[in-house]
Image 1 (tube, each protein chain N blue to C red):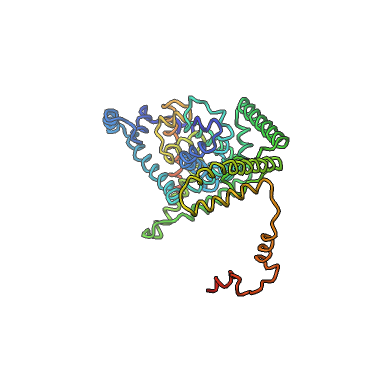
Image 2 (tube, rainbow over the protein chains, first blue to last red):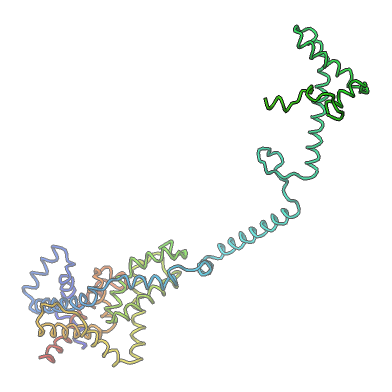
Length: 237
Length: 182
């Protein structure tokens, strides 16, 4: 077997390079001229060519119809562990491969996040946020008792102010109406004046007025019912 | 590769996709069986992933992966030899006989082709590992001499002389097969 390691020609390396087409044009021409004069190189070139054909035939038979995808998928799956690694596995792998400073930074960031989240929870529990009382467009507002009382109080004050204003406007209107022409207005405003005069201290009804009121309310019998101006009759008509 | 070095599994997946075919071909040439080659390919990429930090930035990815793959194949062959050499041989024969041949071949040519393929397989598998890996890298992976030189960290002349020696040994072994067949 030892003699097999000894080349039969000193240009054995050129023979191999020529066999595999890795000589440039000049070198190829040179080796071809050498091979035409060297029987051992010529014989070996032919024999090695046959061996190459046999090896290539074996390779093509073995790998020709074989797709690499099977090996790829299995190799990739083997590397990553599984096709879709779990979050825990991914974190574990990340920490295993990360440098120390990155591990420290991630740990610090996680700690800081937890601390801030805890503070936020504590603050929310101790001081709940006020409801949006100013949002008057929403019909479903909920008010606290204090706010409700304040709103009611304000509304009452507004109403009182409005009433006060309306009563204070009356003399002005009186003067205007006294000056305005037309019997109807004068008559109506005279009643208003009468009412305004009565209103501060209500005077008791006279006997005639009481009887008229009782008759209107049908509390006393009327001599002739047909004389009554019934509202129902007018409606029915 | 830089992303893979930082632990990015996706980036390493791209490396696997790019190189697995060559590594599989190398493993198949070295081991001679599809199952073994697939396992060796897996183990190669697993070992590469585990040893990402051992990758030198100045080296080529291909060279690095080839070295790992060849080591995996050698380890695997040693284990197989320890288990049962004869069992492996029987399996090889079985696989060789199962190769599909073109239908237009005559039965005599089919048998001759199968026998020839089995003989080539046996001859390649019986080469010393340093010669076999050069043959496989050249014939199965179709690498240039320079690429083999880079991958194995050997001088160019050594690669050529190893291939020359490997071809002479194969020639001798196949002649013996021819004589036996005759």
